[in-house]
Amino acid sequence: MLNYNSPINDQKEYSEIRITEVEPIIKLNLRGKKRDFMTKIGKELSIIPPSDPNSSSGNEKFNILWLSPDEWMLYSNDKSDLNNTNLLEEKLFNEVSKSKIGSITNVSDHWTMLNIKGKNTFDLLSTGCPFNFNDFKNTKGAVAQTLVNHIDVIIHNKDLNNLNLFVRRSFANHLWSWLNDSSRFF
Image (cartoon, rainbow, N blue to C red):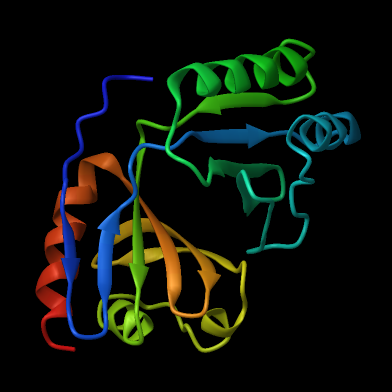
């Protein structure tokens, strides 16, 4: 993992919305189709990658987001400990990539994760997003890949009015500015 220099380093709170950057956490891209792949991931993480589109699975340590029929994003629920991150990545790489049943790629430095909480969370996102949040906001664990203010994002609905939004690091500052400007109107 690179030396993480956040593009944001800030937290904003408005009347009904709180936006924070989540400190660096491990994010791994998991790819595979074989049954052995699912078994190895499940054994190592104590989570089976979800097979239903736009869903997630998780436990107290990790969440796995469905991205496509053979692709998932794994992220931790705790701030990254560099030693544990390297051990987990190495173990999964040895079990999956080296045995040629799938691939494991560290994308921790590729994605910035923002947490958005509050009563007006989905109203805020709806102002700059073509996605219809009606069913999404009531489905805990739902995942969406969409655009917010013309920026590709992955949204994970953690709980009622509490979501994690993943944005490419190079666009994080731009999205952060848009979220802050738009939040002032709620």
